[in-house]
Length: 92
Image 1: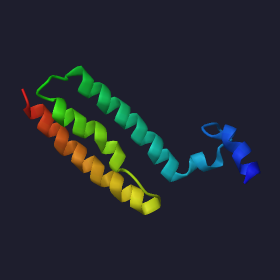
Image 2 (image 1 turned 90 degrees about the vertical axis):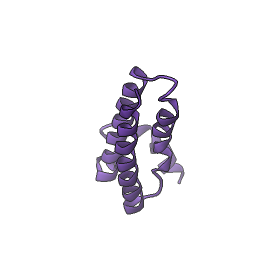
Image 3 (image 1 turned 135 degrees about the vertical axis):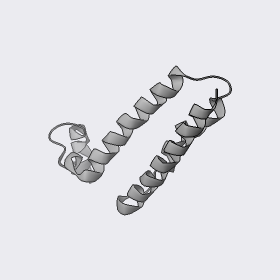
C-alpha cells in the first residue's frame, strides 16, 4: 500500500494508467459539463431562478457509486438536469 500511495503523484498525468479507462474519461467529461453548466447559470442568475439553480448545482452530489451504479446515477442526473434547465428557462 505504501508503494501505491507514493504513485499518487502520477494522477492526472500521461503515466496514470487508470486515467485512460472509460469510467475516468466519463468522470472528466462530467466535470467539464458541470463547470460549463454552472457558468451558464451564473450568467443568467436572478433571485427568481436561484432555487432551481441551487438544485442544478447540487445534482453532482447524486452521482455516487462505482461502475454501472455510478453510470446509472449519472444518467438519472443528466435527465434531471435537462428538466431543471427547461424549468429555469421558463422563469422570466
